[in-house]
Image 1 (cartoon, helix red, strand yellow):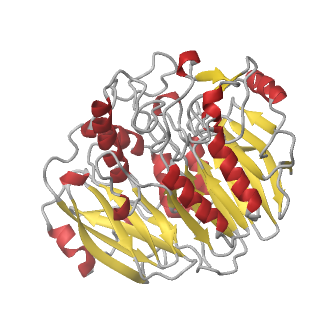
Image 2 (cartoon, rainbow, N blue to C red; image 1 turned 90 degrees about the vertical axis):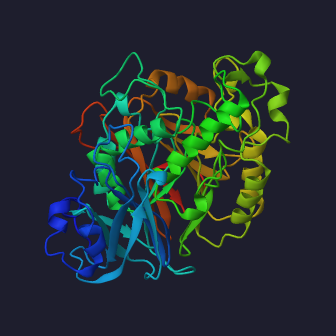
Length: 510
């Protein structure tokens, strides 16, 4: 199968894509009142692939920095998808509306495609053609598959770094991209380390969240990563508010005020991600957790550890999100990081899996991280250890093949073993893929943490980057890819490479 280079794919600009396009597919969208400036400044994307379909996304914007977007008008948008990058074999086309009520975002759910193959897509509106994106469908269910390349990342704070990681991620030609949260940061500008500013306001309502997404999405390297492959996405806290959990925020806002803010944040998230209509939020509620099968080779389950979690505990002794390890409240088995319904769903996805590799996408470091002062974080799995234990026991008792946890959030690379009890053989293996641009931790501090947590086999906090997973029937190869986040043109290098052998959990350096 012909696969174009990243340079060729991403060089198909709007002007080049529009050459010779007089077919009827563009008629209404092209004939409507012209949009004066180029409206595809936020790029294109695809996501949620199936064996017979995929979601195509774009959002019209002539000025990503404007708070008001394109105003109250709606616009006709034509789309097409083809089996070749020259669009000689078009297999689907249609027209839809970019409505002001949806922030002028477009979500096209394409069906009727062939399983396990590449496609190319583009849009047209107001006399302008979009860039061309590449996507692919998943293999047929139950199919024997030789390989899956998955790239994953998280935490791309705009003002603290550039997105060189995304440029190299796109060049790695992944089959699938998994983004694990903190796509935007909602806060005003920090007072230090501001490399490139955005509006110095806190995103609190629909307009300001929309503006923040547009500000991030104007980045050409982020657009390249979106155009390179279909994405599966999950949020973390900064898409709403720093360190929020469930219906509660750490700010002085009342519960009612916070839920109104969460509703606006969730709506803006849906508008700006390649998600299906079924994920459209209902006020402050939005079902985002999901699973995806890659034939018989892999199952990827992605969970939401923000929306459904129980209230924080041990508050009387909490300091900087840290609580004593021996606080008895945190061990209460009734407390859940995922909520009862999501935990039940995940247990079912684990128990009935026939995949050779079983990946869990979750937002943070899943393994225990004891701190030297005898404390743990109250914001992640260590604040809800019973949930972690139930998942590990389900993996163990169901004899699930090759469970691997992939994470983000902590702005560091980690590789570690996951065991039900410390000192026991590992049940699963964990790889946290650093951060795209958000600042991390010193390696001196991470080395001290590893001394207290010997199940953590690798840690790196001073380099930005992403993780890459290559799966075959024989094994998994996980590569941590590092860049200089302060250098827009940074080259990439392999920081570390690990192998997980089929049938054998645990971290092994390649």
